[in-house]
Structures are given as structure tokens and as C-alpha cells.
Length: 147
Image 1 (cartoon, rainbow, N blue to C red):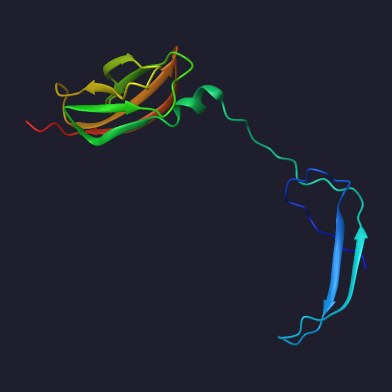
Image 2 (cartoon, one colour; image 1 turned 90 degrees about the vertical axis):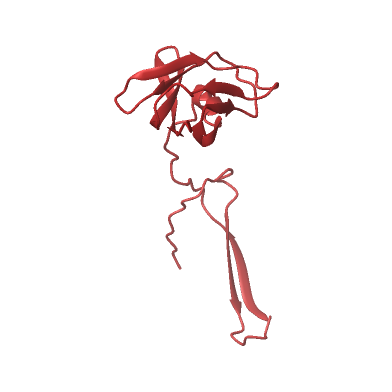
């Protein structure tokens, strides 16, 4: 019997594939095998994996935590790991105007970086984390200062 099947999983050793077939008694409580066979198959390759690898720059800052959200008077930026590069941050309003900016801590071992926002208007802002001129990560933050 010829069997055609699309392999849609990664195959680490395509020369070690075997096809196993068996015939079992149909009774529910029966565990009796009537016949079985193991046959070596020809070498197969799974589907080609397509995609882009993770960018190491965006990978290390993608896990940044911004809290509290919504923020009042200040918010914090933290990371579980220290950063290997220097980054800057910009707080951008909905018109695209940068209202605050600064350098991002590289060493978070002493705690989170505190950003004061008590002087800016309430609203939804975008926190853009950048290296050079290229924005890598954007996070939304709501500012709701209680006066």
C-alpha cells in the first residue's frame, strides 16, 4: 500500500524514519494485537521553515515592563535583566509630538527607572524605546494625573 503524507513538523534526522502499523482487536477491553509491522521509510524532509530570526536588539528590550498603567505623577520602566546596549526613550502624544525623553537605564539591578509625568496633560501616550534614530519597541501608556 502506498501512503502519501505531508510532514509538517521539523525533522532532525530524516534518515531514521520508520512507519509503524498494527491491527488490533476491535473489542473495547481487548488489548490484543493481531498483527504489526515496522518498515523503514525513504529519507524525508519536513516543510521549510520560513521567517526571520529574532533581532537581538529588540529581543532584550521587548520584555521591558512599564507600570503602573494608567499612571499618575510617574511611571516606572523595569527589566529583569540588564541591557547590553544604550537606549533612549521618548514619550509621544497622539499628535506625534515628543513631550518627554531621556536615556534608558542599562543596569536595572538597583530597581526600576522612574519617569515623572506630573506636568503633562492627561491622555494616551506612546513610549518609544530607541537605539540611535530607530524606534524598536512601542508601548501605550495612559497618563491620568490626579490633581
